[in-house]
Image 1 (cartoon, rainbow, N blue to C red):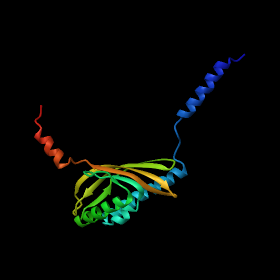
Image 2 (tube, helix red, strand yellow):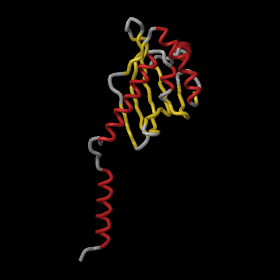
Image 3 (tube, rainbow, N blue to C red):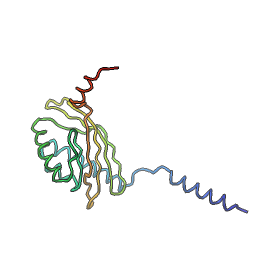
Image 4 (spheres, rainbow, N blue to C red):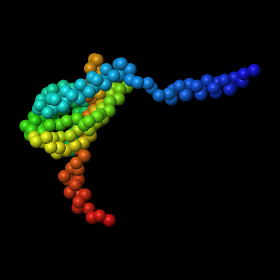
Length: 171
């Protein structure tokens, strides 16, 4: 006769193993979402490099938060628009361009997604003057991926931090 306790343990073990199984290749929906998210990224770079702060801000949700280096959090689409209208125009006028790194990662879970990657800032001659990394969080709203959180930081130490580091005697 089968011991009911052993049967329950075996069934529970099967459920746990099934839950831990690796997920297969991305589904068509996930692949389409990743493509859509990468299209937002492409639009961001095109608008920013072109000095079009309005187009950059249009990629953000109404309640988005932008965390730009050296600035307090910028909350809400109207504040983000104000920031990018000034920043993108000044950036384009400088002749610099931002380019995405060689590969970025995208993850999708339901109506939320994230993208992590690297960027490089080039001067007019094409020489790299800065590089860094970014993390952007998206939410699907009305079948469209919108940026809800965005942050990036330079791999170059800020001038104040570099000056402080050089002023501290080595032990």
